[in-house]
Image 1 (spheres, rainbow, N blue to C red):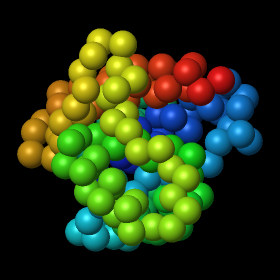
Image 2: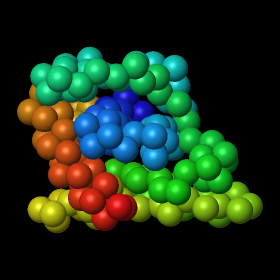
Image 3: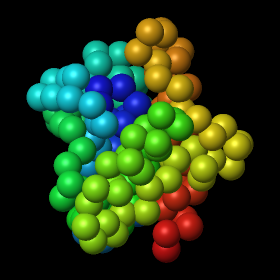
Image 4: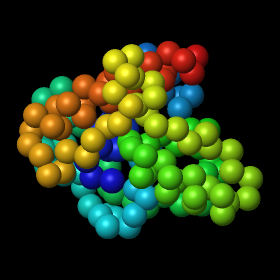
Length: 143
């Protein structure tokens, strides 16, 4: 929860703020694993966001049972996330969250948002661009 999801969270938060609908959305991001809990996003993710005029104060956290009962949507980045989240949701009574790949909203049909952690700044920019396309399309569909 230090690369892709904080980028997506920050992008979506900016979109809903720019559209003046932020009061209709509760936006957060979380990881399936507990590897980086409490950490700020990767420096390359923060740099990428700053290059686009976006700031974030996100601290990594792990998805909780409450998330499945609180959020209408849980959007994830790849098939591994999707499988893990669906498995976790099966253990939650009254799960209301619709669990989907964020990339399923991509007008360019890039279904998977690849983890840029082992890549370079260009890979973070690719994630940012995918997140912008997907978040815009998701917001448009959700109106």
